[in-house]
Length: 97
Length: 213
Image 1 (tube, rainbow over the protein chains, first blue to last red):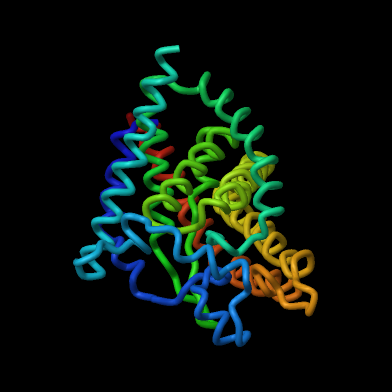
Image 2 (cartoon, helix red, strand yellow; image 1 turned 135 degrees about the vertical axis):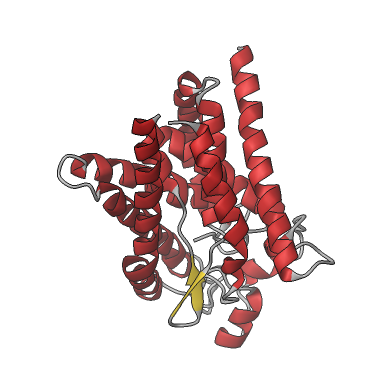
């Protein structure tokens, strides 16, 4: 297997990635807490306090201050680059041993 | 299948890390002997592909959506332990950078979408590879469905085990009689097929090029 054959697939998928925005439906069982307030009339205790404490850099694959397509592209590129470099680092660290 | 923070009780989270830490350690040891300058870029690019395929949200009837995970492809190409570690990393980055899936729930998500999915895909492929050229499709379909079942069970036991004195659920509120049919219908009919098609196409493409070069 040659890595040069994989990059074209990555590039095509990256180019098409805004197709993932065609639906704004949430995944089953990954709803925002508002869903439970509406559906059950209350938010389960354990879910409440966890929510506000975490601030990801690109929340829900969006970049603050940009449109949804731009934000999605930025997220896709950032994710691909981070994952690739993570592997490069793992390779470097393990190769030294 | 990316369970957010707050959905699972602390007891579930603790148990999941107790199970996953030895599995990660063992997987990492397996991975070490596999890594060289040829396999590292392959793993990097195919892990990136797994990340990307998870961004293609597909709507299903009932007002929800889902996506393929790409674990079966990695498991067929590199073996289940390597695939398990690779997708665990993808899930970690999704949790930390994008808030997709929780940090406390990373172990459970990695158990479902990385560990279970990798071994299911790997064994399905090996059982069928001599019998049909569509073994990668079946492996992909089977892989995501076993992962979805595991996810549905973990979510579904939360209200059984963790409710307050009045019976109000403290964490994820729907029981297995709701989670299993909801998750499995969508995965058996739709997301499993998408995972299968993705696995089949990319696998066939990579193998064809291999023979030519």
